[in-house]
Image 1 (cartoon, one colour):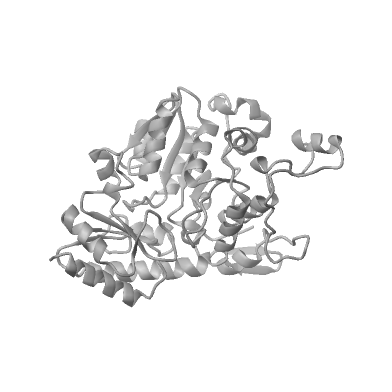
Image 2: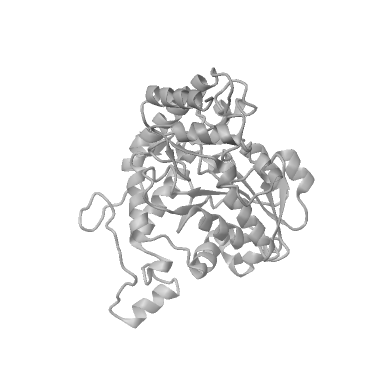
Length: 427
C-alpha cells in the first residue's frame, strides 16, 4: 500500500488508485454489511448472546473472533476503528470515549510509576492538566520549551519512555518536525506519540512522517458536526518494543511490535472502561464522509480570514500560512500547503477581546474546535483557567488572545463579521 502524506494522498489497490475523498467512501475499510446497509448498523447493545458457553469462552480467551460486551468491543465501533486505521496508514486502532481518554490510555499503556514523558510545553490545557495528574501516579513529565531533536538529545534519560507532542499545537500553532524528532527518539529506543487532532489525515499523517502512534480527539474535525465526543489511538505497528526498557509491556513481549496495541486493548483500555458509545461511533463514522470537503473549505477560509485581518491595525493575527510565521516553512514541507483551521487574534487587552467576541454575529462562543460552524473563545478564561501564566504563554495564550476555529461559512461573510467586530471592540 503506497500513500502520499496529505489530502492528495492515494492508495494503490490492485489496478486502481484512489485519492483522499474516494478513499473516505470506497477504501478497503468500507465493509459489506450483513443487511446490505451502506453504513454500519448501530449495535446499540450492552452484550452479545452465544449458543454455547464453549463459544463464549473462546471469545473471552481471545481464541475466537467475536463480541461479548460493548465495553470491550462492538461492531459499530470496530467499523470506525478500521476506517481510521486506514486513513492514518496504521495497523491497529482503538477508539475511546474522548480525546482525553485516548491520551490517558496511550500514555498509561507504556508508562509505570517512576517513568518519564518528554512533552511539548505548549500543549492543550486539558492535556497539561492530565500530565499533572499523572505525577500523582509517579509518572513524571519533562516539558521542553520547544519540542525539537535538540531538546530530545538534551532531556532524554534512562527513565524516558515516550515523547509526546501535538503536530499542530492548539492554539500556539507550533509544528512538530516529526522526521527529525522521531529519528532522535528512535536512536534512544523511545517511541514518538503525536496528537494530530488539529491536522487530521487530510493535512498530514504522522505515521508516514516517522511517528509511532497517532492520537485524535474525534470530537473535532473528524466528526465535524459537533454532535459526538470520541477519541482514537492508531498504532503504526512499527516500533520495536524492548520490554527491558518499557517494563509496562513485559507481559506482552511475545506480541513484539504489537505489544503496545495488545496491552492497550486487552488491558489498559478494557480495564479503565473508557469505551466509545456505539451511537457516538456511528455519528463520528458518518462525519468522516465529508472530512476532505470540509477540510478543504476550512483551510481556504482560515487562510483568507487571516490574510484579511492582518491588514487591520490594532490587532495581531497568528496563522501558519502568514509569511512571517516562524513555522511557515513547515506548511509546504509537512502540511501539504495547508495551515489548519485555527487562528488566533491578540486584541490588546482582555476587555477588548471580550468586546470583539461579543460583537460577532456568525461565530459562536463555544469551547470546541473543528465544527462546521466558526467558533470563538477566550482561552485564558476557560481552557487554561487552571494553568499558570508560564504554561499559558508556552501555549501561545495571553490575556488578550482570541482563539478562532474557522468553519465552512462563506469567507466573505466571515471577513466582514470579524472586521465589524474588531471595529466595535474599539468603542
